[in-house]
Image (cartoon, rainbow, N blue to C red):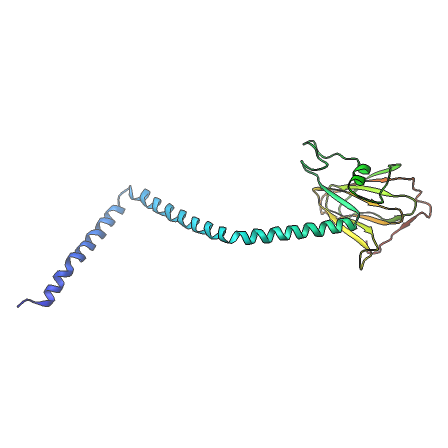
Length: 231
């Protein structure tokens, strides 16, 4: 009579023997010098597959992120344009190409004609008196109100706040915008309207040109000084 247990063990032996032979062959292969390039290839293949999966996952979610970022930029642009309009100001990129930089030599402009062409109202109609100045970091220019002239400004060089009196702005009674260090701004200040320029850049100096369409006597009562006490 056959022994069932012996028959069961004999039926399992071939598989067990093949496993042992495969393990021995694998260990023998890994000990050889050419095993390292093979393992490196396997590692690189797995890395490539992992990166492809991550890239596919990013692409599947990217459109919503891109759309949201685009909406935020459009909202900021609309907000900036509204604030610039309240401050009677228009800004341009100082880099090429832009409306004021026609070639790689840099920007060049006529402040009076550019302001008029850009819809800036109330600025100087001519440069009877002109000022060119620097505002060092933390410095302030203006904070006064001329009653006998209109003035047009060009501002550039550093991050700079421009404040213009505007009774149409709720709360403060003035509009205030920030000009970037890589921007050039042209602004108009009508007669009887206070204005101020503040350099808020920690390192760079701001520069400005002020064109006035009449001669100002700063010793007379035609100019109000220190209009805003919080500057």
